[in-house]
Length: 443
Ligand SMILES: Nc1ncnc2c1ncn2[C@@H]1O[C@H](COP(=O)(O)OP(=O)(O)OP(=O)(O)O)[C@@H](O)[C@H]1O
Image (tube, helix red, strand yellow):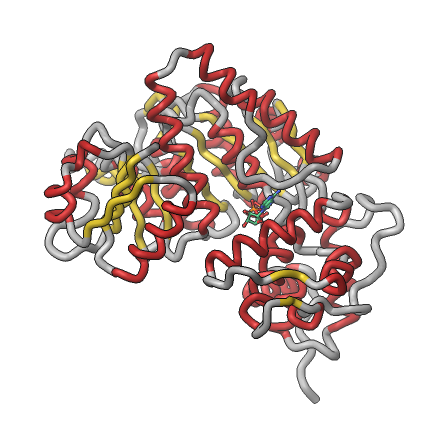
């Protein structure tokens, strides 16, 4: 049994995490500060999970003191910058608080597996990976079995994979699964959402930044590509990259080299890039907004995640799985879905896919006082959603979004619309602006 040490000064969080880990079969010890942790013997554990802000000594100090034991850093101050800093200091990985239980468990499993793998020979590693299904990914329909099979096949090949699928279909989860099954599993997995970083900052964030190269007083700031050295860089929404960034990324893929902004020198990097998009990259190539050479470099292998509405019975499996996850998170054991709720879940078209389903189930757990979730708690807009696309796959998510907003905006608030679509109000607003679908003003 793996021994885990949690260093966290907020008792409620520490206890909750300890319970979660104990429930999943880990032997856990707890400490409220670095000093308390040292008294327990840092080297006696298989993995240490440490908060950054601790009384006295910072949690990041543990990284050095605990070597060679891997340290997973938790912080409430989630930013790409702090993630990079933790990784630079040698953290095995980084997780933002409040953390998702599944994400925490997956990360721990991966880090422990990383330690285990370094003690095993390569042949054994391959067998271990082959025998287990893709961890954390629920899905038994034919399309998801094909996805799972392809993940197993591409994982070990160290090639670039372009992961496609509508928003919320699990592209990041698939990328993590590929990383975890690859020879890079013990290296960092860095995920970046290219659409979330302003154009003015993205080059420096990705490739790093060097100041004063010509004055002699050089200051270097490492980028995410370098931070992923030895591991995997997952670039979500890669279709949003500006032309200059596309050119730099091509260099990384072709030459295995990165050149910082403001520098003339290149450095070698060993990074596997996994990219994802819900955009029509072929169309973008035709319109010359996405480089053709980069497109071919990225799609060496493709992985297509089907929309939830095409996964048959998986929707029910996922609903139960997400319910268990939400009930655990919100401490509501024993709560279940009524037959009517399950029927409503099967009938809904889930334009926001698994993420929308997860949000609906979590909201229902919060709203439901008794032990049984009814359709009303799920707030699925019964009868409001447009019928399923006649030729599924031909109607784009954008058409679906437009139709849904136009049909429901008179009777739903912006918050309800966003919730029903499984997106944030900010994303709703951004999509409205992009699709020239202005919000109706009250008369
Ligand atoms: N097959 C699955 N089994 C269990 N959970 C899933 C599955 N697919 C997705 N999820 C969950 O749904 C949520 C959304 O998944 P994820 O972030 O991977 O989607 P995405 O396609 O990358 O979304 P976006 O394009 O909006 O970034 C996550 O909480 C993820 O854990």
